[in-house]
Structure formats: structure tokens, C-alpha cells
Image (cartoon, rainbow, N blue to C red; front, side, top):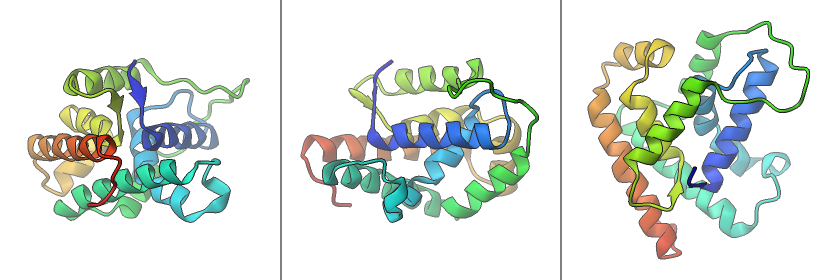
Amino acid sequence: MKALSDGLLVAWKIAAIETGLNKHQFIEKEQILIGICSLEKVLVSRRLNMNFNNKELQEIKYEFELIQKLLLKYKLDATNLRRKLRKEYGQGNYKHAEKVIHRSEDCKEFFNRSEVLTQNTDKLNCLHLFAAIMEKPEGIIDHMMKEKDIDLIDIKKKALLFAILTQKNRDQDSYII
């Protein structure tokens, strides 16, 4: 697997926490999307900043700003999307015997697909994974997007364009939108 951006690493950690707290066996795309929509929490909470240095926090901030910008183009709000996903996905009844929580095979496929979509970059970020999820959202996410009448092909394309912006800005060591 390609290297992951700091933002995607954080989203994955948040997804694992969500999975454990809500008693599901595996991390699924829904929890990953909740994690992506939760990046702002890391930026506003010293307790959650996971000891990132300033440059890493700037990268996470920039990535989240692009996610927010993308969602706003479709009249979506990260907080509302996160809350609705959490509510719709609900509680499970799995008891984890160990602290490690793995991704489901389906979730691993989304990571693999995001690598295929992003052959010209060295790092996967949240926008890459978001695009892979929008390519084949199924279930709760598909229902939520249809409910908002969102063109999945269009939002996927825009997510990939925004992902290119994160790479260009990382290469230039600049995080200005």
C-alpha cells in the first residue's frame, strides 16, 4: 500500500475508535467516512492532536478544508454527514478481545481502489479514499447521496481534482487554498 497522508492516518484511527465504541467487528467504509468528516476535531482539540508537529497539522487542516469545500459544493456538511452516518450505521454487538481493529475485506478494497485511481501520486489522502467510496458507495452512503440527489460520478471527479491540489501544495510545501 502507498504511504498515507497524516489526514488519512487520523481518519483511519478515528474509524477504528468508532468501530470499537459502536461494537462492530471490522472497520467499514462508513466508519472511514466518519473519520474523514471528523478531521476538524483533531484540529480544534489539543487532546486529539496526537502529537503532530505544526507542518503535519497544517497538512491535516488543508486536507480537511478541501473536504469541507468539496462537501459544500453539494450542500453537505461534514458534521451533519458524520452524525447521520453514525446514527444510520447504529450499534453492533461484537466484543473485541484485543485492541487491534481490522478493516473488512470490503474496506480494504476501497483502499486498493483509491490506489488505482491515484497512480500519479506517492501518498493517498482522504480525498482519494472519498473518491473510491463515491465510485461504489452502496448501502447507507449510497442512500444518503441519493437522498441529496448527488451525482456520484461528478462528486468522485471533483474529489480526485481536489486530491491533486493537496499533492501540488504538498510538493510546493504550501498549504494555501
